[in-house]
Image (cartoon, rainbow over all chains, first blue to last red; front, side, top):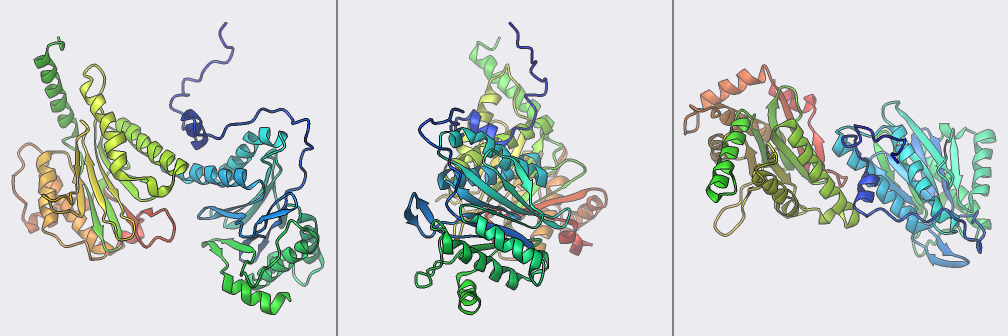
Length: 268
Length: 257
């Protein structure tokens, strides 16, 4: 019997996106079956702390550097704030293997789109692309492995404004008005940011860069105080949180020296 | 009829003649190194002819837009897949041209019942660190002309394509006598425009087999700049991103007027 859905006559000429290209070549990560693993509870915490908020100079994204497996600290130099393109950052809480692969697919998707279609992908298109990757990954989440809960920060050059999105593990996207936090340390961070934004001396959006960085570091420190999965600061080992800023000019990463100086004078 | 070998040779010969005829009015594209990278330049009226392929690879093409599009997509697909599965460092123009594109073009060209690609392409790859650049001209029949660097041939820091073989060789002759490698972008744009004029003057069946005079080049260039648009892109070594390709905007060309 013929399929009731006719193939579109344009199917052959419609622009192909990068994940379908990978799928056609058998290079796309295999999707797991959409069945829950009966022996496992669905995980609800992702061991880390990521925070992002809008300030006067754009969006600041910060993350601790601890990677854990259960109650074991595996690595204290994990980079959870990943650059996707000139103006976009993806920060991740969740399973690193899946998250880094997603960042890689995303980065290549945006480049592939620009090169093949001869125009930049729109901001909405980029936000949606991450959502699609999360949906494709949901089989793994149901199996109890591979859960990823990201934050996406970007600068809308057309609208000349900073944009901030957070996602759930199924791929729903939410635009954050002022701030977003994800990971096991996020409840305390969210409280700190809410307090500052509502009763602080200035709302978050009015903060200068130096003030924003101090607030981010203090919030991460607060999270590390009660959450074992969030890494603190090892000054001797010179491992500080990662802080990146997205502004109209692009992405800047705060260096170790700058962070060390702030820690010395403003944190403790 | 083409079961007989000599008929096949004849069919290929006809096909070559037909393609050359289709390409002979193509506007030249000059591609040359300067102190901070590589410049692609041509004059065109409407359609885009210079494209980004990957972080350090660019392409210029003349021919049928449909065929150029298919080849461009094939190149981007091969480069992107390699860059994704391995790394950006593993994407190389030498492999792209020799192993992916050349066999594809040759097969299409020699299967006389199918359609060949009506396209001639110039690719350039910006060398990493102290590595030298690579320029590759790829013909519709899959033949490759690379910028040299072998024992028998000196390395050329440029590559060109044009509608006819004569025009191409005169552009090359012109560029061999110019200095541009260690000078800035503005100088490179000027040299490329002159090379374009040399190439454009020597298109057509009754073209002279020698370089036109400097005066003739200047007049021709001026004449055409009035009616056509400069299309130019660069790949810059000083780029602080992995992506080096950038299309030049009118501001970059303002010094010409």
